[in-house]
Image (cartoon, rainbow, N blue to C red):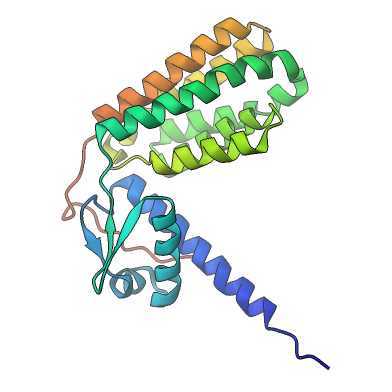
Length: 237
């Protein structure tokens, strides 16, 4: 009889890898991991309270997303993201998301659109609380959930990847100052236009929203490595 592989152990290891990857993405967003700086897996592992293996595996995931690059015998360097990179990612998102919003207006039901209302409200609540990670996570769910109503899973995957690659560095100060609230409120406004059946106005609103988000990126303030430390323990389950 063939011996079964330890699938449960593999599952636990993969779960920890995902936890570490999400924690590292959050550290990037908050400005705790700085562009151009090299971080070693053992050092990060000690700060997160895990072994070096899931950190290395998570870093490889981030490398495939273009967020970090491997530095031989040293660790991983957080990749720089230029203003041109941000402009190009925003342009591609606009080419995809603006016409898709119009398509969804013409095809989605009222119930499908209203189902996104709690997430839109969650975005505003997180922005008012200065919860940057909560804000971006809810924003991701709203945008991808809205695009999913168009019925094209590849389109959703593409925008999801663009969002990962156009990650935001050091927006903590903007969140704490309440600068994200106006952008957050635009999600509910977009829903209202879509529910009213005004495809043209909804498309224009999406265009404005993406431009507003890009302006927030331009206004972001980088913090120095001395001001922030990525040290935090994972709540492993």
